[in-house]
Length: 106
Image 1 (cartoon, rainbow, N blue to C red):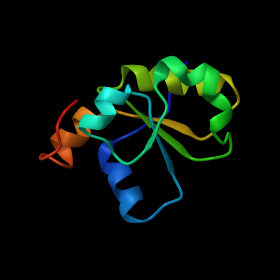
Image 2 (cartoon, rainbow, N blue to C red):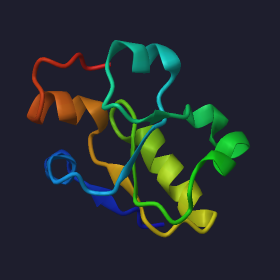
Image 3 (cartoon, one colour):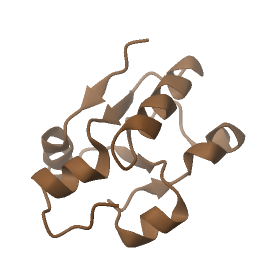
Image 4 (cartoon, helix red, strand yellow):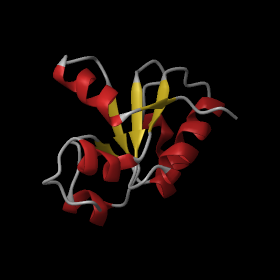
């Protein structure tokens, strides 16, 4: 399955433009506590049980540490009928490397 992706530069531009996006963080609580993008924490392991917390019509950008879990989450949500879901390529590591070098990479 082809997974739509968005770069950290594109996400940064969307945030600066106050675009109507929903940032979904599928990392674990301990990772979120170290650094985050002020998104909604829903750990990947809980996604299927808590899918009802998400709006299938929202423009959702999904991220994790490096892109693996968020890619699988994007695939899953697409399979559940979500139309506007995008994997953040490179995850929070790419964000820290390319947008916010002061951010921890966890």
